[in-house]
Length: 107
Image (tube, rainbow, N blue to C red; front, top):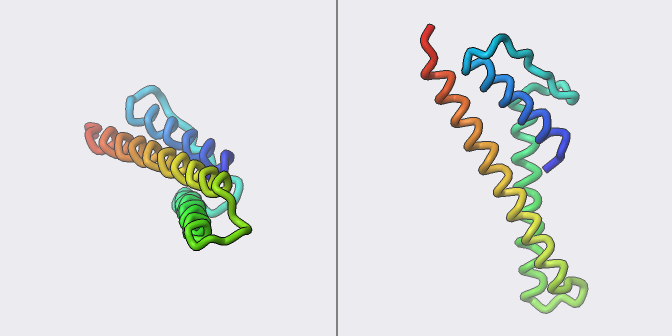
């Protein structure tokens, strides 16, 4: 997952949380790619999916006995896929929490 995209996503979550908590007005930061929040989220999920597919393919190649893939490569790719997935789950949890905070606000 791109760190700039994750930083932008987290800053948007903090802004939404501050707004939901009534701590003044929050200014939303626009992503530098110009695609909006949905596009940023989709590209991040696509990167996580690509990382997982790469790890799966390396594991299959290793199991089939390919000489170009080592066990270290498989383990590193698997760890990267796991870490990126766990980060995505944490971002999702924060998004759900922010959504619940916003929905529980009184108008």
